[in-house]
Length: 364
Image 1 (cartoon, rainbow, N blue to C red):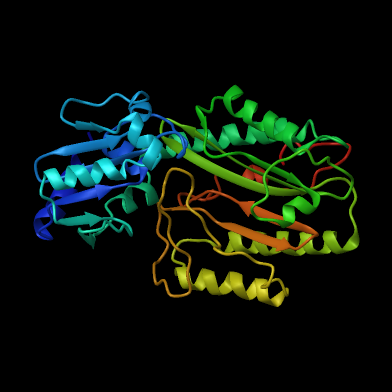
Image 2 (cartoon, rainbow, N blue to C red):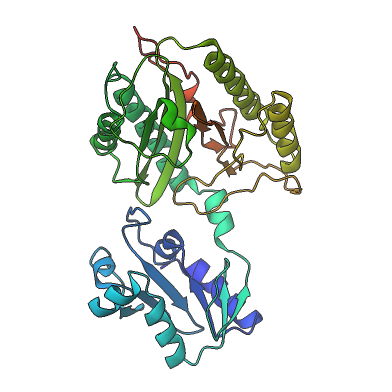
C-alpha cells in the first residue's frame, strides 16, 4: 500500500467532511495499492473507494484475476450477469456499495457524476508523484526510452516499397516485447500517405509508396511506468509542397523543444509556440494541445495561455505537435522531457526525421 498517499487522502476526507473518496484512474489505483504491474487501460477495470477506515476495490472477476490484493483491501466483484447488462464498468456495484455504507458526500480528483450523491472536487495528490518522478521511476523511464529507440530502429530497417501499414505495426508490437517491454501502452499506430491526414486513422493494409508521409506512434509499459513516442518520416523523395511543410513544421518543433528551460513560465511557452505556428500559417491545420501526458502518468503540466507555473528542476514534460492537412498528409511529433541536468530530452534519438532510401541512420 502507498501509505503516505492513503494518509493524505484520509486527511482530505476529514478536512472536507467527506464520507469517502472515489478513485477511477486505473494507474492511480495501481499506485495506491502498490501494484507494480503493467497494464493497458483497456485490459482491466477497477474503482477504488477509500473511507476513513476502509478501502474497497470494485471490479469484474476477469480484472481481479490479473492482480494480487492484500487482505487490508476489501474486494467487491461484479458478476457475469451484470457485465452483460452494464459492460465491464463496475459502476453498478459501486453504487450498491455506496448505499450499503450510507455514503452521501464523495470526493474525487477529477470530474465524476453519480446520481443521488454529492461529489466534491478535491486536490490531486498524484500530481507531484507523476510530474516529479522519484529515482526509481526516472530510471525505468530512461530504460523505456532506450527500448523505444531499439523498437524504432527495428521498424525503420524493414520499410520498403509496397509494405503494408499493418505489417510494420506488427513488427513494432513484436519488437516492444522483444526488447523488454511488458505491455504496449496503447494500440500501436503506423500509418502512411493520406491516412496520416486523419488524426483518428488506424493501421490498415495501405501500402507504402514513394513520397508518403509515415507516422509511427507507439508506447511501452514496464513496472507500471509508461512512455509514449511519435515521429513523422518521409519515404524517399517527395513533392515540393510536402517537403516545404515538413521542413517548416520540423523547425517549429525544434524551436519549441529548444525554448524549454528552467525558469520559463508556462504561458510564455504557449505564446511562443502558437506564434510560430501562426507565423507559418498552420494554425488552421494544428490540433492542440502542445503537450500530452506520458502514458500511465495521467498527469501533465497543462501548457496553456493562462498558466503562471514556472518550470523547475525535476519535472516531466510531454511536448507534442500535431498537424493535419486534409486529404494530403499529417505530421505528428511527441517526446518526453525530464528537466534535470543539461540533457532534458529522454527521447532525443528522434533528432532526425527523414528516412533515407539507402541508409537508415544509426541515430534517427
